[in-house]
Length: 375
Figure 1 (cartoon, rainbow, N blue to C red):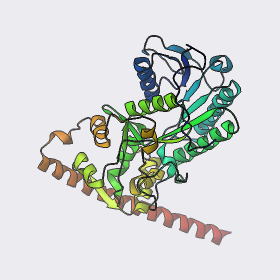
Figure 2 (figure 1 turned 135 degrees about the vertical axis):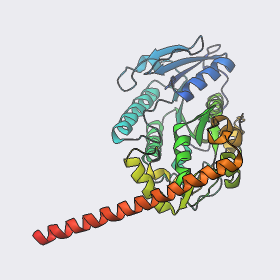
Figure 3 (figure 1 turned 60 degrees about the horizontal axis):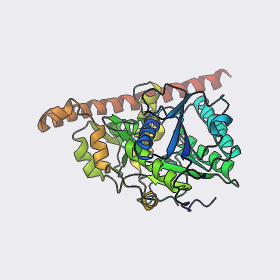
Figure 4 (figure 1 turned 90 degrees about the vertical axis):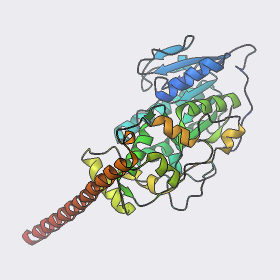
């Protein structure tokens, strides 16, 4: 399969007058619901089959729903006669990619893809993430779909997404099924940060890496629109999903306003994140720190060439996703005073972490010396 090919634009199902049949897994999730709602509102000749393990109440009229477990259900009757499978079901997220959940996700993806190929589904759309490019100092700004896949090894969720991409390509390779892999940047919604965006935000406040790469946010409605676009086009290969451009560091600082932040070297920020993560004090896996210290913004040229247009800029996506907090309602000078005070608390916290690590190391060294002495 040529990952640079765009496919031919599809008007409807293969048969004359037959609607395009889509099966959407994970239709009860945020992206799944927005996509189904978008299709119901704009694509009159598409028939959507929504599938989820959770409740599917509230979907638009005319949507066929099936509540089932993808890890064990018989998928053949569901996929028979299907033109497109949009696979959005996932039990993992940026803050939770345990080996058990990753194994379950892999097993589900394998079952879905195997059945799609076996039943002759024409196109499979899989949701990945732009994080598979990795966050590295040498990354070009922006990254295109031609960039290598090299996720930071200590962020299990990004590594898992890269493995799923490889699995999907291996299953579809040599068949007539087209595979389109979408790589969105951090996804947000009105008044709500997604799990990844929330974790990235948490990693940039308090004790944070002494770096300021550009950032991107994409609204969930635009992600739903991107799925519609690649299905319409019958696209295959990799497609980045992000608004035009990115938010430079100084603009992001203006948007966020005064925030408590203690700047430290990346290695120390990662150490602090590891301690807070293991103690349950923060939603930031230590592997995520690199993604706040190095660039990983992506270009959307290919998606735009397929006819997609973002409804939100990066800045607009950030603004609509952030409900005003208590600090935002205070006068600017008062916010600055509070931010400085909280930053001072952060400095004390950093010192405490460093002292704790040193003491733990010394205790371990003494214990090892005693063991060698008594041995």
